Image 1 (cartoon, rainbow, N blue to C red):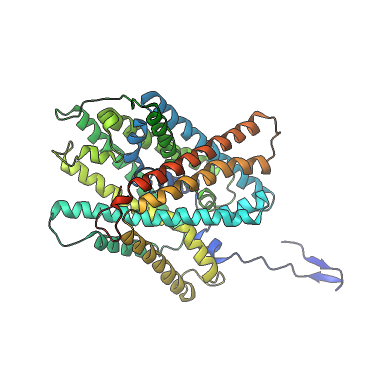
Image 2: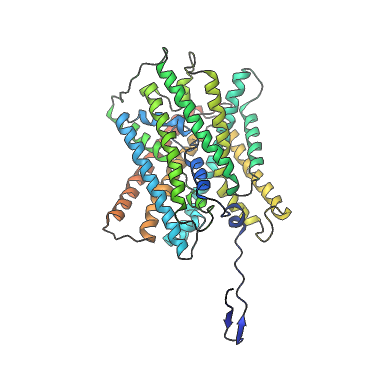
Length: 467
């Protein structure tokens, strides 16, 4: 039993202060009940799943990686894929240590924005992080709706080539499905969906890789050419573009919110979650990268499925296999949309719900239903109005993931845990910050360049997705 608090003026023992009631965003959306493997499921969905903020194609990571290798060739491409994977694992482990360091000193943070403001001691950093997070997460939500609708349209047109349904019809269907699933109140409640998402990642990795191997061995396979561009300037630009792609595909921008779902004490649990996630990454990134680039070489397109299913001629893989891969991607896109909406839902819940009432009380269910539905309606409208949104949001991805996932973790570690300034750890962290800040600038330039090149295809409420 806790001792009573002595009140000197009253000269008697006073009642201890009532425990502070957490805000509804923390109590409901970011409730801390999960295990390390649940966090691993969330991380895997956020990183390995379809990358909707990737340059130059808005689509699944598995389908984009062979294109990234095209810009660098075999040796450099595999090396950069490995180095960036190692750097992001290191960065995420540093951020987890910063969170644990703060928690051990009585300052537990469950939001990225609050962690950055506390460690860096700057009020503007709070608003910088929340602005970048909001841009990324809203962009992902719009992108997932657009891509899922595109998957539905692909399946529909293959069954009914002259059917009356248009892209916006499928956007509405996806938005309704997400609005229904979004009523799951917390990040933790997505654990089963994200486990299914992990299995789907493995599933379409196997399907796409098998399709690439089959295409590479078929008699109709294209001539394998792994040469780089003859122009030195093109080689340089393509290499930097590929590095930007790989830096983006490893990003997530929501690691503190994922760690917040762990039941306390969280010490050591996030490292296990990272190991689980990166074990899946090793399989889901390397296999399609190698098989896709092997099959199509320098002719591989930004979406490897378009190389397998060329506009002219027969598909280089069985229709059932390609159809199943599209279904897997569609289902996982729903999980991606749910994961990246959690920051927005947490902000909504914090400002609209009453933490003293039950999460399923009428007082809290009604605003949750209304606000989350309106948010998804806005995202669906933007997806329908801007089917070229991928080009726009590519800029956001380039300038968003880099500061949140490559710059802030090392800066916060150097400040919070204060390694000696001349130590190898401090110098390595500083070098990572400088190098990847440059990558972010180059990625933003590449995104803007593609935006300009594709401008002639832009048309509001078009029935075609610009990729």
